[in-house]
Image (tube, rainbow over all chains, first blue to last red; front, side, top):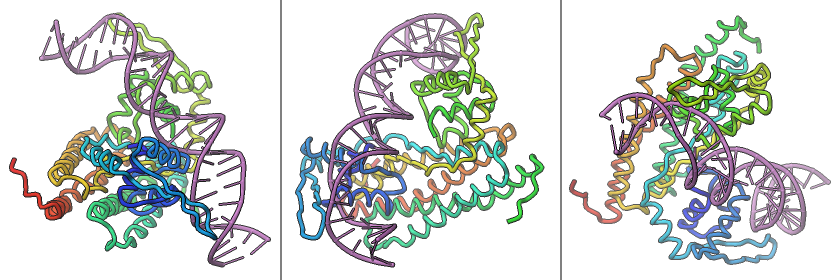
Length: 182
Length: 182
DNA sequence: ATAACCATGTAAATGGTTACATGATTAG
DNA sequence: CTAATCATGTAACCATTTACATGGTTAT
């Protein structure tokens, strides 16, 4: 799904500015399966207006930058609901971390160990943030997606914690590198 | 990581044609975190040759199409190993399936139920294929990545199987749609 | 015969990232 | 006074996808 569709989805939940949509894409459940920068959000919003799927209202309030609030139109809502009926495309994951892990035996053992630790730490941080989300305010689908993310991250963190050390040990054995003192 | 780097990584494991690299990207552990089509692989391979990171040899055998076998050069190997030392960029996942699940309450319950079933089936199929991989022939890093994928897919499939039905039930309650007879 | 697989590529179009450009307000 | 946050946008660049173009071999 492109940024345009994602913005339409965001607007289907209520009016928002480009800035707010960006934040929505970063935090909460949305952030786990999607991301976009201003360079794609603002043009996407403009295009939705051109196509009649959204409208803009400029809000000028004293002591605040001028904001542009976007609203979905009935046509936009219809288009979005039609999209939801279509067969979703396959997931597309690009993970540099997994890429380097694949080539773990071409990496210095100490670096490998650090990468594994960083990854687990990253998962733990994300998990804490996710579990801290106010579950009350979420809709069914949002909570479902959030908890799916939690289940997946937990499984990944646990796997790396359990299996990582033996990967590092094998790497040290292969290269004859003693454990680095910290 | 771009297709060029991924091709370099593939060649670091041995000579290959563009066609073979495509297959590597589709099946086995590699397929879980990366994908690329011919339209990006062939130009990437050509560029690696231009940059002196790989060389080509044209193989003509009777009763077979002409093939071009690419080999990594020492410079290519050095460049690849240097890349492995760098901080990997954040994962980038684009999942239309999760996107529609996020908006589950805007979807007809029967369709939601089908999407959940399709997803679990897809995970189960992949898991069978992954567990069927000959573990003996894999290197440490490859096996690690493969098993990480198994752990993650299992957790996801299990979560959807356990939590999906209540999501569907809530959706039916909300819309007053009775269960469809099959 | 017909589909699937082997095998290589190009060109146009799409879509997204990054860098640039600007400027006000608020919290430390 | 400085950094962070609020707020919007454009333009150049980059990478990738998709469609096109070709043609032999193998299995059903």
